[in-house]
Image (cartoon, rainbow, N blue to C red; front, side, top):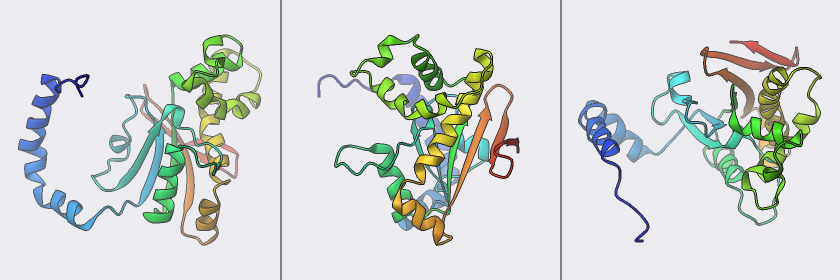
Length: 215
């Protein structure tokens, strides 16, 4: 593959630094993970945004979380049409094979994907309306959340839409038969969360108040 290039020098240096320190200090743990397989307690669906660092937020070790990242932490509805569905495949594997006990959808502040959806649904991003836009068609998943937005200024509506991305995903999770079955059997619980990147805040969805509350 002539189009592939060697790894940048700064990443090579970082790898050697990790291998000489963190890996060497925890060599037995890494070997345990390799030989015993993964047994994560939870799956986290989060955004691709480079500022969202799931393991740091929860202080997780290797092997603790099964993490899937996509644009705006969205989960589509159950659609068994024989096509390619990366997010649905990850959920199926986590619930049916790994038997995770918790499935967390983690949204965040200043989400570019949510901003794109807001602009598209407001008629200000015609490029995302095109059938050839992968981002636009993915953000169609969040259109029901846009339709539920309260009246107000753009900043407040964007913040609400960020949290709607979590709620829409939780709603869509319930369309997966194996997710519903695991919940009914008491083997799985769903959780919705939102983190403020700039402030380090973390909120969780409370079904009793039907809103997000500070952790």
